[in-house]
Length: 162
Image (cartoon, rainbow, N blue to C red; front, side, top):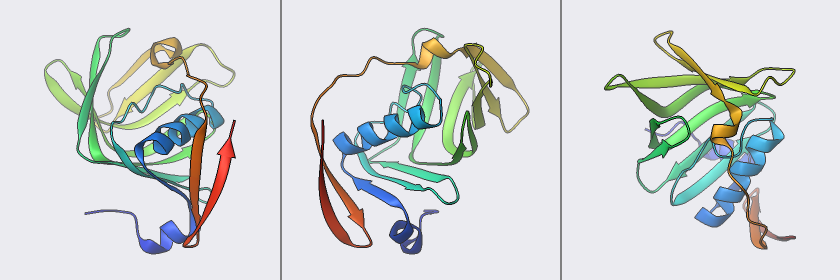
């Protein structure tokens, strides 16, 4: 069951397609001062951000797993990931689990300290938490041109980024 309604899509910054979804998800993470490699989703179909509430959603074709090599953690991403974002924090996170001692643990919050200490903390619904270096979740970005088709209340608007 999806949490995203047509009403939400109508009010949100809304993007379709993997290439644009990858770019916009990384931009959002940078905008809220979190490492750009936190959401290594594959085959993104839809990405949306309701700025007035901070609600974000990402839909990928199917669930995926990713191993963050620098910290040796396996993370599972559902086909739909949702959260509320604010500077330095992702809260009410859904669709993300990490493997802790052979058990999958649901994450519900990710935050970095303000002022920055170089650490990022992941909190689980069970009360467990782990802190790692922020650098373990950063990826180098390729500079390339992306053709953006942003849907604004049902109308497509072409924007060229450099």
